[in-house]
Length: 540
Image (cartoon, rainbow, N blue to C red; front, side):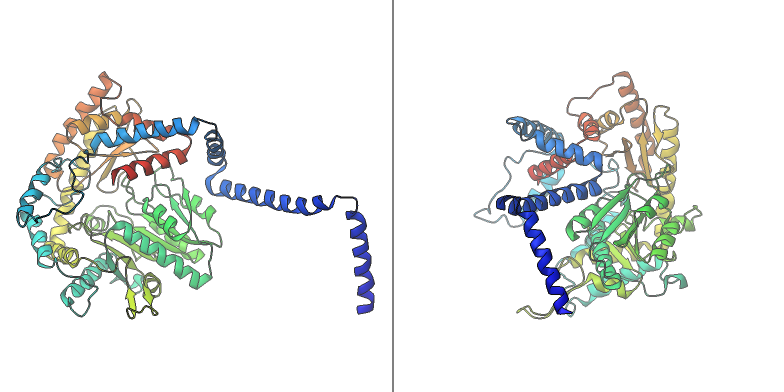
């Protein structure tokens, strides 16, 4: 055998040497290297096209080349800075006079008076903000006073110290259990193993759910290049999670009803898919995604499904009991593996209180971080934060127990009614339309006749703080108890603002309509991203 192979190898060697003898030795060395480099560049380019799309890649590449022209980058940077300055001047006070070092002598209790002075200079928010403050009434009485006292009582506590602050540990467990019960944990379809933890807000809850799902799918299916699919209406926290945890994100267009398009999502599922997402409701338009269909899809492919209930968690269960046609959205839906819900929104808890829940402990275990080789001892932490404010946990517990089911039912009745009144009022303004069919307490407004961002600027001049949206251009109001007594005032100001813009179209001095309008039309989304980063870098 060896005697027959050796002559063959010798002949192949001689043939190769004979063929290569016609080339320069340097070319023989350089050509393979250059070919390899070209192949890598092409591979990278194709990968970018795969991730960002052909149009976005071409535009981004073109803008990169343009910036290489002497003077062009400097000009673009100067124009971007003008936009950043415009954004800051619209609502950000100057930092002149801000403290940059400790005073030589402490202020003692006088610091409280100074804090009150600063607080009085804040813009009025009572009843004028979309979402933001969900508790009704004055902040010095009623439910405000109750949670303030609860927080003050436990301001020094930290659930990291399980053996010391046992009351706070109990509060967290009970808040999680009570919230789980709202989402079907007592129902047979849930599997009876619902578990979770409190977090600092909806973003942390989503981050933890994504991280846990990624690691769970790695253990279950050995997925090492994870991908996640979300509708374009899903919260930006998923983008943050994918950037943090190195997950490829696919944003899929919604359907004509502004819901997650299940068929479109299915087309993106592959062997690397770890998770799909649904919202109940979505932040932009207040519309509930088809959770049952998403659940069937996730279950059939053996992947995770996270349901974002950050807005709807403390409304939908009670709206259903009040007779509203609320579709299934919780752990009773097969395929749902995790849920996030904010207690600090419609749960009327202090800010910084959210919950992440899992269908079972097998998934949640991947949320924890355990360290065995630290000289500081054995360490394990359930959430992103190590130390956590026990005051917020206590405030959430106090809020839920003080209101009870009857309190939440009454709150839901009031805000759902206010939302319906606003929707009816908007329908009576012919220049406006409602985006989609809102399922809950968010009403998004658009217009085919006037610039809706100019309307928003006029409303802002009247003290209102609404949220500008894109695709389509619109604004929304997230109805809270603060709005219940002033629905008529809002509708009057809205109509007056519409008529003002209709009679005198064009941006007002200091308004942000031109910036929002232009941002939606700039084809180079990388430039818009740079604008946002520069704005944040100059603001915080």
